[in-house]
Amino acid sequence: MNNVFQRSASKRLAQFPTNFSLRQETPWWNQILDPGSPTLTKWNHVILFTCLVALFLDPLYFYLPVIGAPGCLQIDRTLGIFVTFFRTVADLFFFMHIFIKFRTAFVAPSSRVFGRGELVMDRKAIAIRYLRSSFIIDLAAALPLPQIVIWFIIPGSKGSTAAHANHTLSLIVLVQYIPRFSIMFPINQRIIKSTGVVAKTAWSGAVYNLVQYTLASHILGASWYVLSIQRQFECWSIECSKENNGTHSPSCNTLFLDCSTVGRPDRNAWLKQTNVIINCDALNDDDKDFEFGMFADAFTNNVASSAFTDKFFYCLWWGLKSLW
Image: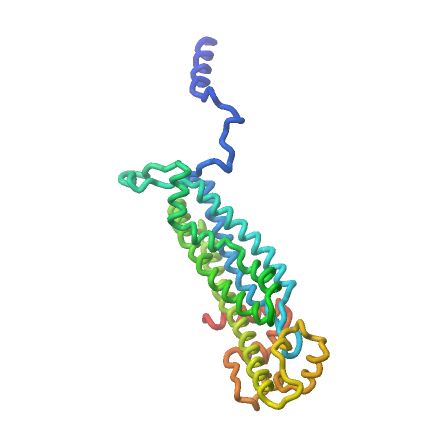
């Protein structure tokens, strides 16, 4: 009986790789991943959640321009630091996603006849295929463009800082929103292909749909807010030009519309005699030269000058109301 046991044990040991060694294992950063593996499926769920968080964070940049004092705009730097930190963390996940896609095998198109097909494990072939397909979109989604603009480009530029931030940041965020939104579709398809559904339960599916609806309301409300601020600044600019062309003394300087000039003697002297603020007051029904339209609520309800939490929930409610 002992001989039988020894023969059985030696047979099992013979089937184990003789050259097995922990030191010879491929490091994790050098491994080629199976596109249908559970590990990659979990990562797809993680990057899908990251996309939703990133799409929620980006519209928060629209809340950076605020009315800091009568007749001027400024940047909410506390909010800017908060959004920059969490967006940078999300950007790191996007760069990690790019790295993982450089290490993910793909099914050779020529082998897609019967069954699953043959996986291509060659790193060079994987890199070439990825560079020719979705690499540009993934890279455009991962670049920290708003952080660069708000902390490096705008402080080094001349002119009205808050107004420049209002226009430049809005454009950058909207342009980068397209690739960040578009990469969600292939991730959704890969999750469905691997597991059959995006959400495993009905409750999680309902929450997923509710998050998407809330996200749409958040985007709409934040866009309404930044357009309201832009509308207010446009009115100030028009009235300021009228004062410069008239006989009003002291004349209006466009730099006065930025809160960085608050406290200067020339601005204080202008503020005591100017009609720019009165003519651009949304509560003033006597002046019909400039219409705020649907953006008047931002000023009649003191949304633009309120705390961030009050401002955010009001704009979110405005977005929900507009989608109904």
